[in-house]
Image (tube, rainbow, N blue to C red):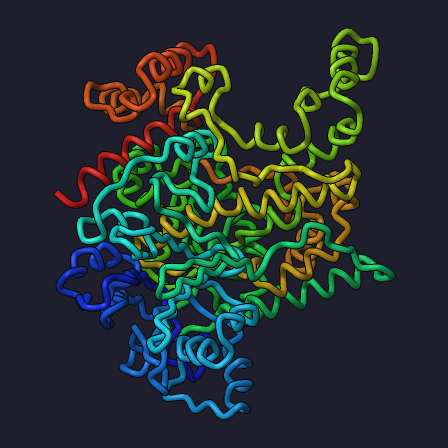
Length: 632
């Protein structure tokens, strides 16, 4: 544990409402029950602030000293503005020195006050200087202007609602807060966003499952004026065309990356509470654990979930890592019965529609870690930045054929099947690389999706995540796959980790998504990384410096559960009762024939629909627990 002079790093939740007729004051008595929905995000403290135009409510999880000086909502020293801030600003000591040089005097040692005074001094442009994980609402009292902002990677969530009153904007750290009675109740479902959820297993920003409620995208700020005018600005993005470093050897690039990872871990270990690390049998979290352990003098606590009954068990590899590194490891072997008992908790934790079934093991490791620590470091981000998934490598192997017209590609494909030409993947039958990538991210069978109501099949007109608009080259394919993994897949991963960890009031930090580490990742030649055929090549080299190459597994196993088997066995009765029962909201929305057909195909073994069925079950759970159950 590292102790520094600070009083305010917090993980928390906040909500608020801005706008109105300028006469009726908002107050905690009106919003108190909605603020209480955030209690797992912030069990240690509660606060509120209001004037005639704005209400801010806050719940706090103390990471560093909980003192009155760090209380939120926080008003600036000159009384001009007020803020609620969720997360941590890792470079706040540097920014504090810059502000002090400009004459700012601080009343506390919290990073929240540094954020507040930076905004007060430099305006919303100050966010471009921030390196951290955060979401905040900053209100200028005199100008009656609200600014909502989200960090560069989307680590911390932020939702906003247009309304419910005329000229109003409501906002919160959780989607369920914005549909509470105090915030206007439940609006209509947005059916094209429901279609995205069914395909991608989550609702990608800026959409949510509801009409009129939005996610603020990662790296964006939203400015709302007194007259209701709204301006959405992007303050950070992953470069679409990063330039690889020239004239540097791989060893020099690795040294730069190692320095960045070391600095990021050092910054993110700072806390006045115990800090540990999630330890898997892969590459990313073992690297974070190795660096953290070296920094703290071999006194690191690590946490691992073992699943000896499942094929995807990584605990043996993680146990070997712990032995080589000499770290303290807490290992929990989970049986199938114990995991299945967690399903009700999964339903409670998923405060928005979400269906990544690795949520379950993530909750198990979070619950275990919270018994010993308040902060845990994870290795999330490594797969997306360093080509750790199969998808980029598949695109690399097949993508150059997209240079040909579609008719030529069809001839190449069928020629390969008839052994008249080299065999080609069916990937090249898609219209372009973006369509292929959208298809491999989608887990809902296309033949059944085409039978859903037309409104659900529609794609939002402004949905551009998978657009491929550049000439097909080795570099553009590599850059595209990394960008889509970062802006798509990573958002699903981060939502999972946020909901799972916050359910147990555990803060999870992600050093590999530090802005310095991201910059260091982009100087590697993406095309060369894919050409090598080895996933996360740079991270593996760094990890080998700590544990030796022989200790690193060659294949990625993932962090999942034997869901297909469970749906035919232990979960079968529950699915038939809840998903296919008379009161099923999913059947009402999608139609019984589609749901019944997929279920029967899965049960017969003709096809495996475990991803799609789980997405339907998660949607039903969300409806039952979050919509029908939260406010009864």
